[in-house]
Amino acid sequence: MIKSLLLISYDELKRIFQTKAIVSVMFVGIFLYFFFYPQPYLHEAIRDVPIAVIDQDNTNYSRELVRQIDANKSVKIDLHIADLQTAQRLIEERKIYGVVLIPYRFQQHILEGKTSPVSYYGDASYILIYSNVATAINTVASNFGAKISISRKIAQGVDPAVATNNVSPFSTQLISLFNPQSGYATYIIPAAFVLILYQTLLIGSMLCSLFSKNSDVELAFIHKANYSATSSALLLLSGKLLTYSILYIIYFIIYTVFANYWYDLPRLSHLFTSLWFIIPFIFSTALLGKVFSHFVHTVSDVFCVIIPTSMLIFFVTGLSWPRELMPSLFHIIGYIFPAVPAITGSVKINQMGANFAEFSQQYWHLWLLTVIYFGMAFILENRHIQKMRMTKIKENS
Image (cartoon, rainbow, N blue to C red; front, top):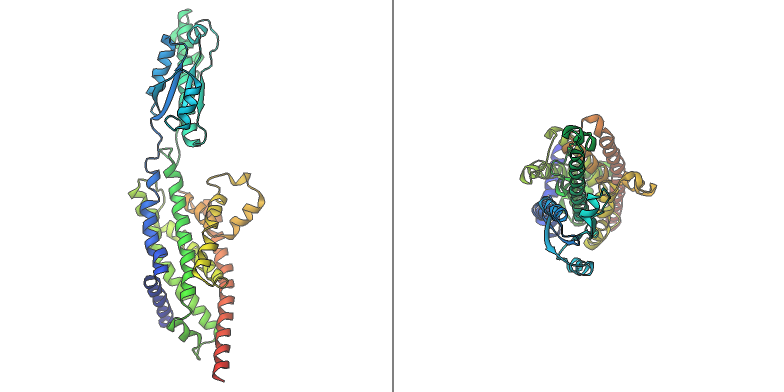
């Protein structure tokens, strides 16, 4: 039995590395994704976003505000322009991403104790850039106003310490938990890597089933007289799962351990905990591929079925949009695909240092999917073997 299991496993491994379509997904694709997918996100902190200034006041106060905005690390003032029409044209040409408008009588209103609003017009089609620049300008403007208020109170004879406390009674310190750089790469790459493992394993499992139909090793087990159809189906599924487990444990270590050091991403878990969690993910994904393989007939069918679902799956995880705001249908979809609990649980473990109680829901969810998909794959494989044996009996008779 063990020898048969190893023979099936070896045959599946050989098929993976000898079939161009499969090796391009389960080997070449894995390493191409590893090196090229994170590249656009490596400079994840937004710095020196070019903006323009319309200084209609042109006084000491307005020039000081402009200097403080330009000193902020998120913003770089590239141009001083005269009107909003010019600003609109420059934004449309992507030469700048926004414009700060300092109104007439800015200094006069401040000296009179009146408010003088500073306006920011930004290109909100790039939401990350827009929010960072808007936050930076709002912070600078708030600090600028606070300093003026403190100076006014001191000029009125208020003790400097009291004036400062009245304007800023408490100070805030922002600490970015689990994302120290507050960047997009730290946030998105670990989750995307799990999705890549899911997608390549699912496609690879389906392709292996398509290309194994003429395999001498599998045909020998299917028609072996001393094995029942049930035993043959169990052996074939178990042997293939052994191959995928060995291969994807290696890939998982590369993607969640080596990648974190390579791309300087935070990692807070022990390797054993990560591997313990990923085993049911590998099983359930590979078995789901075996189930799907009984309903597709060509290589193009495989890609047409799987590729369009990737973005949907990533959306359902709740990383790009809160799950609480999604309709119930999307929650149901999340219960079906192993990638959803795998991404959620893996991020909890590797990036947030979660203990078992905090990721147990995703862990048992994956084992439940493993049991369900194993049962489905076993029934379909058993039926296929019985059909093949009946066909051979008819041909011999």
